[in-house]
Length: 180
Length: 255
Image 1: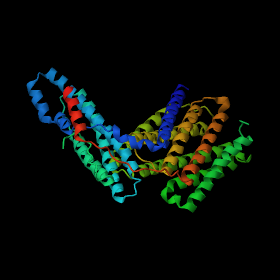
Image 2: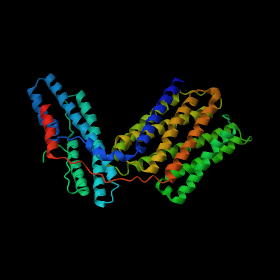
Image 3: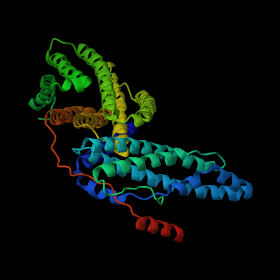
Image 4: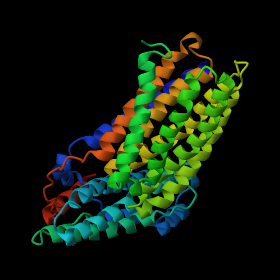
């Protein structure tokens, strides 16, 4: 009977989560307008610097092993923060893109579809990269390749700009924190 | 009122299955069956299953063994149809997101394998406490099937929520109904399979039947009633000018 109690509790938790997701989905999407303000600027170049293998090799040569591991973990933590921010931005852009799909302008809809597609890809890459970064924290000497996130973010930036231009040609739109 | 073969009991067994038959007919008329063919088969199957099992349960000339054999067989077919239905919902949800489809497929397979192992282990621990082995075996089979179904639907909801996927209204309704019914049925069948509430098992039957009834009504709502047309205003992406960039860079420099 103990087993049954565990299963009943697990089923109740699963039901509560499913209902919570269902309710949050059913809520009005009027908050979409304010979503864009939550986009966090990301310095892609700084992120690239963190990911750069040559930088890691240089630090490995210059620092004693224990210190290198410490520095490497710090760099990985910073990297994780960037990736989380990129994932959050992608999440916001997915929602904005879905809202923009209702537009009457065919070109804007096409741009919104592209934005949703690329933001979804970035969200996936961010989730996978985070898993990889946390795994690397356990083994700081191992190699790491998260450049797909940086590349994805740059592509996403292009899609967002295209959608922005189509919806309001007078307003320039940039998402990444790189100076033009 | 809460007794086996009471009027309420008959209502809860008859009404949802008749409603499913009506739903299948209406889906056919409106062409919705082309979009969700497996759900349409599922609705028809449930109605046919009831049409066979209900008289078998009521007719005094039918031996209990015959009923339980028919019940066992119908459970196996129902399990196959339900898993095909879950697969149909997955396909519908991920169709607009090809970049996620591969990852989702991989994770679904891993989740499925894990669930099958957990279901097999929990089934192995369940007691066979009835001389007519088909009765506890049916309870254990139900527990295993609903465990896998519940796990898969739960995974689908969490995955879709994490990636912010937009659901089709009908697919969402079908998945929600399946999710609610599988969670509650899993709990009730787990209690039954593990020998709980021995004297009052009929109460669990009422919970199961009432849940199924509610889910059928949910499917009516989501599949046949049109969604509310929400007035969506044009969405504009934020403007970022040099001042904002400078502020961000200054903040970075001060850190």
